[in-house]
Length: 42
Image 1: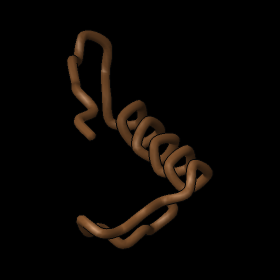
Image 2 (image 1 turned 45 degrees about the vertical axis):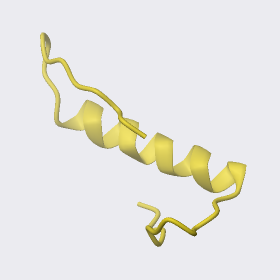
Image 3 (image 1 turned 90 degrees about the vertical axis):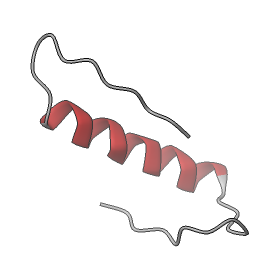
Image 4 (image 1 turned 120 degrees about the vertical axis):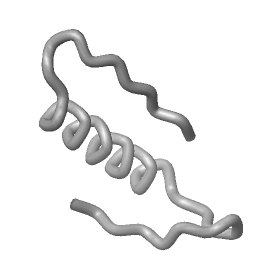
């Protein structure tokens, strides 16, 4: 999994954002079951 520094002044490249969102989606799918509802808030 990709680790990125979190902070208000941190700028991510489009590629870094794509990878981060992909990692979040994979983690969410791995921990979900049918009927679950979840939200991605950015």
